[in-house]
Structures are given as C-alpha cells and as structure tokens.
Image (cartoon, rainbow over all chains, first blue to last red; front, side, top):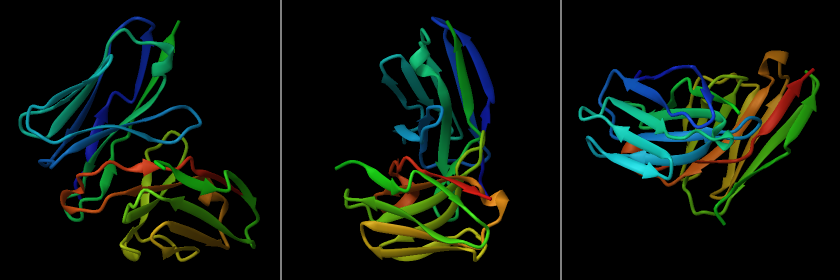
Length: 111
Length: 115
C-alpha cells in the first residue's frame, strides 16, 4: 500500500535557526496532513493541504504541497523551545483513504 | 466540545487480566479509530469504525476486541495480552467522507503496561 516517507528522522536545531522536514509519497495524494506530538503527549492536527502547489502559513510554520501532490514540506523559522516534539506528515491510503503516518521528524532545540 | 476523552490515562495489567479502554467524543464525528503507538514510532492503525460499524481491522490479534456502543463511544477490550503489547493506545475521531479529507482529533491516550 501507499506509504509516506519522511526525512530527517531527527533534527537538532539551535534556538533561533530555521529548519525543514520533508515528506514524500510514491503515489499522488488527495491531501496531506501534518501533526505535532509533544514529548509525552498525543498527536495534534496542525494543517491539511489539498491543492497542488498549495502553501499555508501558521505564524513561524510554513507548509507546502508539491505540484505533483507527491511531496510536502514543513519549514519552521526562528525555532523556539516550544517547537520541540515530533512532526508527522500523514496521507490517505489509496485503498481506503485512512491516514498513513510518516515515521516523523523529532526536533530538539539547543538554547 | 472539541475533545476526545480517553480513560484510563495509565493502565498496568497482568497477562491473565481483562481490561477495557474507553474513548468518548461529542463532536458528531462518525469515524472513530484505535491506534497503537510504540516509543519513537508513528501511530499504527488498528481498527476503524464508520457510522458505528467496524469497517477496518488491520489484522489485529483477537486479544484486542473493539466495540462501538453508540456514535460517541468507542471501547477496546483487552484480554490475555503479552508484554510486547505495552504501548500508548490512541483513540481518534474525524468526520467521515470520501478521500480522507478530514483531520483527525486524537485523545491523550492510554499508556498500557503489560506485566
């Protein structure tokens, strides 16, 4: 079945710096979703992208959906300690449209 | 109410015990899910209920038994579990529709330890 691949697995960031995490699918996705899970917490829905080439911003977070709808990225500017956690992308499976999660990018921040 | 409530938050059970995990939502979502998450791994889908009917069972062992008493409640009955079943069990809900075009709302999970 369709899988979403996510890189990098770990991201160690100096406070104030920017970073990007990437998500790739072997098949075209109807949409892609991003979730954040804080340490000891549960996944929290951040955003959904539906249109080819779509770009959405939430404060310091910028989400992009590729033109071919096979890849997506999350860019965080001026990283803060509150950004610590694991960011998952998730796309609907081609057979039943239920979410398949990427492996996640775990972000740690050096003050 | 925009939450999914799970109880208990923590559970320790022996391999011969029977226990149940509970999940409740009042957002009118007609799709409800059970996920299992091991440490440093993404959530793995176990079961999906759509309009109170079991629509997906991801080949989960029969020692896990889901139940959906009504549109707001979801249970997961546990029996004769193994230590490797220790994990965070997450309940989620979403609107139901074509194409999976709805975000999921997750509960805070039950952290299960099997001894």
